[in-house]
Length: 131
Length: 115
Length: 251
Image (tube, rainbow over all chains, first blue to last red; front, side, top):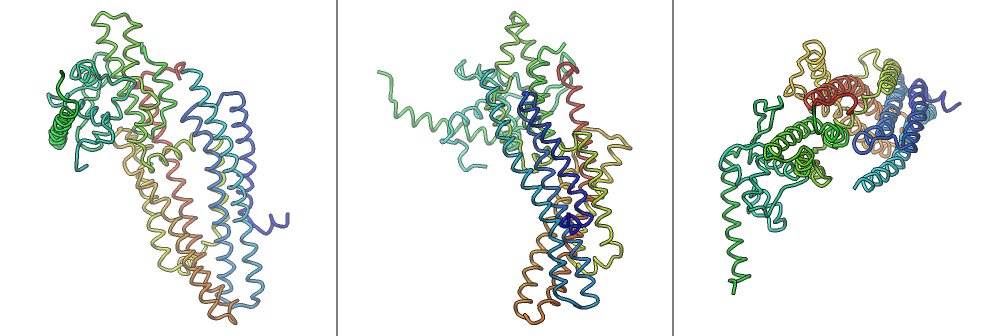
């Protein structure tokens, strides 16, 4: 919770994306289990929700870091360094959003990889059955 | 464009190009007409099946050797795509035919006369 | 009646080509199937036999499809196809909108005054130029697609690829400037270690300012791009369905 507060406002959209990815993943897994995910192109596009939101999370994380550090460093540049230790603490805190975004991205990419392998295997099974 | 029109590493691809370009020499053709022409030109030996005509046509069009256009609506109200040779395509077809003639002479020397 | 409706419908769903190549291939295959079918019928063949021959000649095999992907699949076209597919679901479009609004509000304090552009230096103007171009093209396309309703096939995709690259470019440029700045900053700090604390702060301001501007502008430009590209993709799919005479049950 402390980390969440450290990250600031940008933690909210990142959390929203992380929460949204859960039902999206569950829906994709359910479709794959019940063989209702379209073979070929349409199915691939449905799966691409995961890497898409992963990359969006990563970019939001970087934006959070950049704007946070800019605000902090900007004030220091204007008023001079009062406490160098505070600069480094501020830098550390601003990286929370980047790490959070990166974690969401990594998990989304990993799950996407697993589902893609499953989908490709199912598509090949279907093609072999109709051949 | 390749220095040699004939691609010895992929003779079947080169032969398909030769057949398609040769059938366009006499004038514009729709896709289904090309498939029939190729079969007729090769004496039934070569038939372009399972949609293999489309990658050939689209690649030749990308290379600006042929140009395609949607013709006026046909019998069922559907427009059809017609293809014709460009000037570059005409030159390329002449070169390709010449190189194939050279290859045939070379192969003829190898396999010899029938005894 | 369309004898080949089921085949064409399946092909439309599974053909892994970007638009407009996919629509073109489908229309071409449909026209050739029907023409060959009519010719075979005139030659006295039965309906079933004519259909079989037509499919045998013109129904694309997986090898032919792979060859078509090689011919038509440029990186940009595939990327656009992927991203166009992303805006198809209503729930995800809603999520995209909500996330974009929250992020823009969260980033706004850094842009309250224009000092950030001053701190970012000349690089900010280069980055912003790309984003402005992307938004400009987006506004023109929105006017053409939604207001003027110019859905002519030749004009639909005009400018889309350029808009995509102008949308992505600020993010890449921003990261490049950020990394170069960080590299310089560390060099300066290493050379002036006793004053490291103050120097590091001053040196990193420019890089972070550029990165913040770049990512915020990429976000704004990408909102326009998603709206435009999604609309174009839907129009093309509708056009192809009409021209292929695909009914609802065949989809």
